[in-house]
Image (tube, rainbow over all chains, first blue to last red; front, side, top):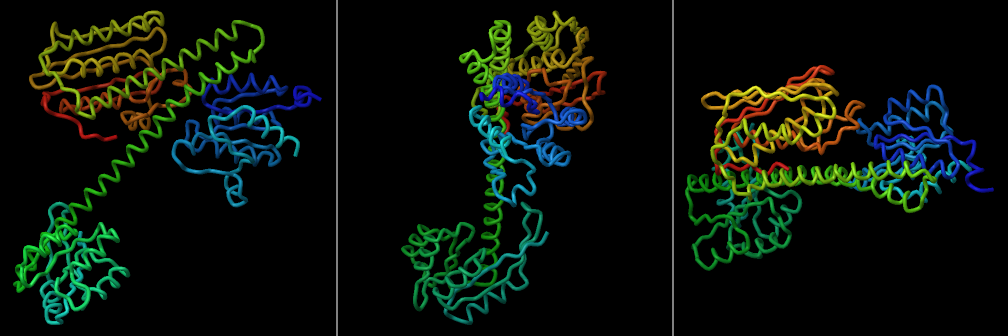
Length: 135
Length: 385
């Protein structure tokens, strides 16, 4: 079974305030079969989540509020803890601060399943998505 | 503010140690630099070995160190301390016979001052006063340098982000185009090219603003102060932005006397006017209006630029003039900006003993006011970033 048919019925919520990041990843995710809904802000995403339930969410950490991504992760997990969330961040490469959702303790306050550093490689993103959806 | 400095006196004569402790017990130094008072607490050590042990436990601020000690000499102690890099400790050597040789050796090893034996309590106090003042100044300088490093680090971090984001966008589009990943419609690819060009333009603008800022802050560029006509510079700024304003139906009006002479560096004033006028167009609504008013007075010129644009909340206005502040919301997301323009305007206004401010009402418009006074051609701005 190809990726495109396997992913056919799955919806990905993509949240980032960079419109070009949204446009590009929408194309790339559609190419491997996903239905993609996009939001440009935490507020817009929360609005969308009232009517739609994605199978997976990809959220940028730094939106108009510094921690908008964290807050949105928390919101999604409260809605349905089973929705996998990938938090995308440029934080560590810029500030030297390390965020990682790898250890149990860190996962307890960062409500994301995976954290990826920007710039993200699409192959890596795709691998993480497929791993999370096959769980 | 009262500070306590910790002094350690190292001498093998108990009488000497007691004398120092007594002399400094009720002694205090007023320091104007920190607007405060320093008192002293004296600890004693009878030998160099004992001193080193005690320093390891709790390093004093000032060490009064006798050279002639039973075991390790004072110079030996100095050498040990130099190797251990006690940067925040000042040593005053006490020497019975002020031998030049010892003095030179001690200075080389990092001693700050000397006190010749025998000394009066007054001489001791003077030496301690001098050492304390020096220490406080040195600590302030270190703190300031650390703060500067931190500000610069933050500036560069944000700058890196602001440059990497458009670069990533351009690379993303190039990769999609290379892989023909977006289907067969050429219009889709045309749009990607347009977006790439827009993001590249943003990077170029950012680099340009950054160079302006660096030039202003470094003080390297020689300022050429001459009599310029502010009206003419304003007209030029309006002409520059017209190709953007006209298609959007935005009209720009100038209200100014026939000539507005100002002693200024023309390049600097061009940066100020270009930023103000282009912002007033950028953040305006289609069909809006920009008013530029020049108000000369005997010792100053006031520039007011009013737009009919999106405006700002009070909270947004308060942080607008800082580095890399771009007000991010749905009204501004399609507007290009480096986030440096107004911080540059503010810094330039400071060079002219003036100020920059904004008054605004959301969705009605903003008025930016810049006051310029005389400038000292030698003036430069302390590097703040």
